[in-house]
Length: 95
Length: 380
Image (cartoon, rainbow over all chains, first blue to last red; front, side, top):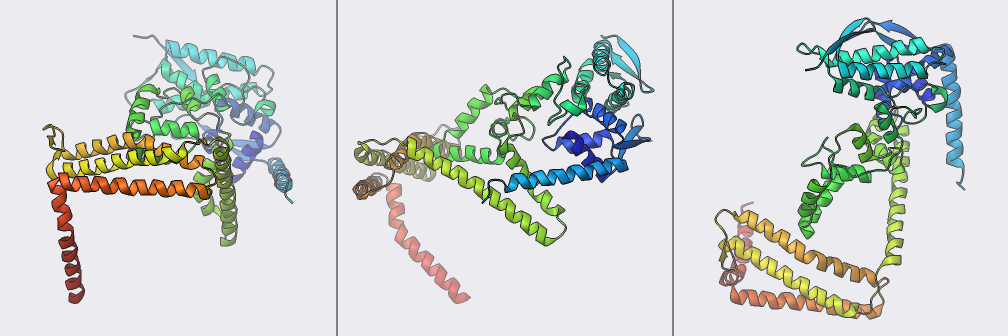
């Protein structure tokens, strides 16, 4: 689930981890660095995302993440699946 | 005085208090052990180190060069425990594997510990009681504040309740307590509250008017359905639990009598206070201003009349579906009400010269007002 949300967030723009945490903190999926870094590394190993380094004015350089073609494809598939499930849930029980 | 240890976190030197250094080392060692089997271990560790370094960097200022033990704990709590198997365990709120980091408790709190009542200082008006109650009930604090104000005005008990709660209810200080104050965020009520908060933001995001209208329509429909369900629940609750008592026919007029008496007494006391500055001839202490006395009177009235009012309402409710038999009781009730008010008014007019004068002055006042309006109309 979190993986899907990360794809969605990263698809919109290049982000670094603090941005992701901030976006998620407003939702019911609020999480922490300790969860996020291992997940991002795993997704990168699977070829869903990539990153490049950017210097920051405050502190060490930051990793900015972006989706690869495979990541985009995965996001599209998951979104389709999500919408399908959503539709099923909505339609069930209605006459 | 504390010993300071200098460390190197992703290329920058930071000075830590010894206790903070121990905490940080323990955190990183646990992380290393947990990531033992992870192919990205080194990368994740350096990511984590960099994130911690950035947080430390933010803490530093021109006068501050040492990170305190307490600050290290806060930063590590923010980081949260290392999740070794992100694919399986990463659910809502970042479920975590067992461990002993300070962040562990916080994560547990976010994923559903029992809710507790705390005072919440952030965004509070006075002592955070209303804020805490709102978080506990998952509703907007404004409604709770309004409820307290109404309680004070109608029954006078709001201030008392507030004071007692401000003393008795503990304040949420630590992150765990704050999380416990609002409990598990994944409830339906919380979802509705967030939906409301996000309502206007979402509306802005729609590209064309048609989609916006459709979404608005759906939102309203859902909200109405929700409200209906609540109303239905309340109604069925009352029809099941309302007290039905054969003595209502007598108690109702009696209660009305008592309440009427208190109301008239209250009004007389207010009039006496505002016109002569004394309570039925008893002069106020010098250090009590008239407005405070009036406010106290209102509160006192509320405390006395409140239970009577509630009892009467309970009687009405207890009747359930009113039949023709009850209309007699209602009529009697109304007659008693009017009679009591008339008698007390008559007594008041006779025993308080100020009131008598005021009453006698009413016709001339009306005449004068009518004349004023007429001249104003002609001038126009």
